[in-house]
Amino acid sequence: MFKEWASHFDTPIGRCGLAWTEAGVTGVQLPESDPEQTVARITRHGADLVKEADVPPEIAEVITALKTFLSGGPTSFDGLRLDMDRHSAFDRAAYDALRKVGWGKTVTYGELAATIGRPNGAQAIGLAMGRNSWPVIVPCHRVLGANGWMGGFSAPGGLLTKKELLAREGVYPDSGQLTLFE
Image (cartoon, rainbow, N blue to C red; front, side, top):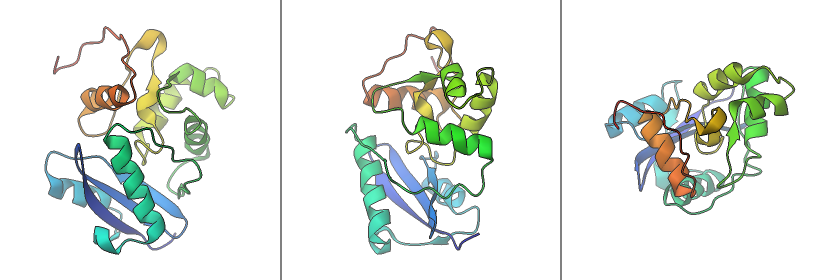
């Protein structure tokens, strides 16, 4: 395991965080209700905190891309190195396949499972999405249940955040799924 660093930064949806090692990005933290919680979450694995102005140039590019995405601008994270050491081989395969689902597109849990050779693995895909350390970069918000069902979303804000991220990409699933906040 490499030494880990983290930084936090303001975006149109609130204060986000990013963690990285020499091997790549280890995590993205979407805003918690309190910015201090965001910082605590992104540094929970012992990362040293770095001011946004002092991050390495390649990390500054990632932060800029995240801000663009969260502003509603089409963004690609192709070629971005991720440090997946904390994840299983199954999760890594799911994340790699999901990164190929582009802006404004969605995939079902079952389709993603079939893509990685596990046609009956929709539920396992859902669990992998819940463990995703890189929301937005590994766009788990683009994974829907069959028939447009929203499924779940473990990032702060839950399904409301998932709907907002999809809406920024021009995707409005007709789920019929009620949430506590609707």
